[in-house]
Image 1 (cartoon, rainbow, N blue to C red):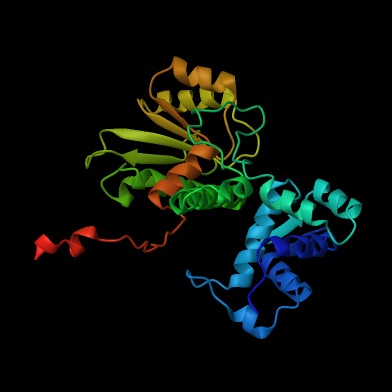
Image 2: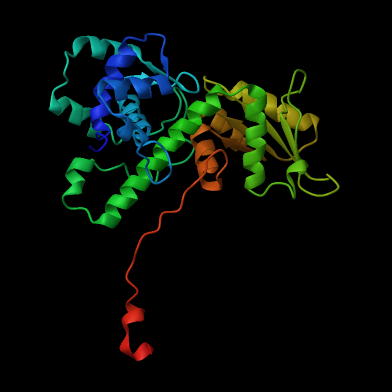
Length: 311
């Protein structure tokens, strides 16, 4: 018997997490859902093409749907915990969930995407269209369309996981990650040209990038692993720190976002670039920092091979 589809994992996960108000390890939740679905040993050993256990993959997608619906969260790495809304939802919804409700949780929040932090302004316009509801699309979409949709959904899910992890690492580790990203973007001839200087008394500077071998031209970096938005005072302090270093260029990177006032200030002066949490995770995805990718071989007919005149 094949492993149940991921939508069938939603309710077992919901019910299990409802018994764990302080949250539970993802591994424990995987196994609890598998127990509830009565998976046998053969089903628990099935793998997807990437090598991951299939039941864990499907439990992960079920949890993604609960997160998109605002019912669950990842308060720290490897921990799944229902939100207050999720606890109330589980209390109100009698078991089993009606099929229509499971379908709503599965497909009703496909357009939920990363958004700027509260009180933050969007740095760049969102050019990507929202994910189309899979139920309405499946009957008319070509395989290529469905593949593009699946790829977009995978990217957005990984982006959300990246941001969760960035918010949970230590400030020092976050500074190292930021420098790794900037190096992948082409800053510094080698990784040694990007130095972390953060710590107490850092004067608002967390990293320094040497753009030439003699270190005559430098970019200064401030990296803030914050939950709250970055305001104008923080940007003014950073600008003052740059002036103290007689620096012309600075990059301010945060896991949260920037207020309108902060963005206006950065535009009013020269040499400051802002990177919020959404832009940071997109840069990490594009440059494969903290993520890996796998190659899928998609068959396509080679018409030239069958050409009689090709010899």
